Length: 92
Image (cartoon, rainbow, N blue to C red; front, side, top):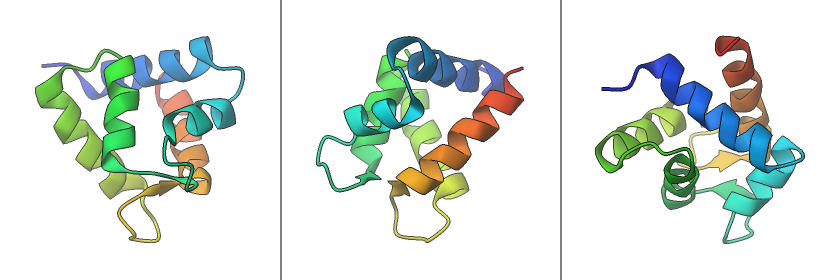
């Protein structure tokens, strides 16, 4: 099973290598355009990061659990920025 650090590194690679800014990444994965990432949209980001199906479901839930500060079940742009900053620090 992939380690937390390797999963975070894969997420960081997708965000930094394929997009000019974290906001571009957020907007790309926010397919509904509602300013929030749903479980399905976060799962799509993880799929791009080559996180396999079984782990992807667990990681999606853990990301929402860890970064959804307002408790609405989604990741807002503000919450996404916090996550990206923490991921950047943890993968150095």
